[in-house]
Image (cartoon, rainbow, N blue to C red):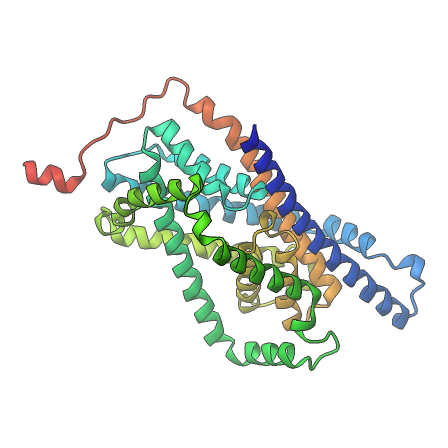
Length: 365
């Protein structure tokens, strides 16, 4: 019971964080929107940011929203295939449909408890495919390490591609040479910075006590199992195909915001480079632990769009269209379907028995 209560309280904390940031963004944008209405001579009673959001959602092109869903699906098919390729050298061959549905469910769980989806992912593949949890976690950790590497490469490429644009942006933010003020005067950035510093400080102060906790001991035990999983990349059958699916995952991640540009008139003419910038900025917003990047994604995506001349109110509308299309349309709807399908397709299914990795079989031959 304590475990469920703890998880529920964690969910409330993360949800409150995300909703708080989103509310603060809405409040600031609504004030700016009404100021613009004054300048344009529009009566305040006819000037509501919420009405604009509803209108913008209603006018979004459904075809391109569906294309975002297609890109989401392709990225997760590639992730499932890549995951299976990492498990095969360990002696396991899970069904692709199981790996795919479990990946989808993990995204759904992450909406409620950030990063908890990865733990659930290892547990579910263990349940349905009889794979030891620690070995599954090793492959999941390897996949995340590869994701971090890909993200760093994409960030580096974006910085080289838009060096002057980004240099001017950060210079303006650090010096405050624009009407909105310095980035480091923004209450959201200040709050995130203070929370980060306090978190690191608490971990340092209580590090000795943390080493005696059950959680620490569990993590230490899991690390032993990670070793075998982390070595699987050298043993995959087709390294070229493995790299292809790794690239495909991130290519589809980029495609999602870029395809969504075409769904909304103020962003329809933006370039792929702008899409890349929104993707990179938005990814940083999702990394921060709030439900699916609620609030933080909006903030960073808006910053990226305004670099390319999109008005703040329009940028806020786009951030909401993309966020709720992915998180509600993709993660929630598809996630619930995956939850329902997974036990159904596994009725009477007996997973493949453990077989010796290829290198060991060759030695016996």
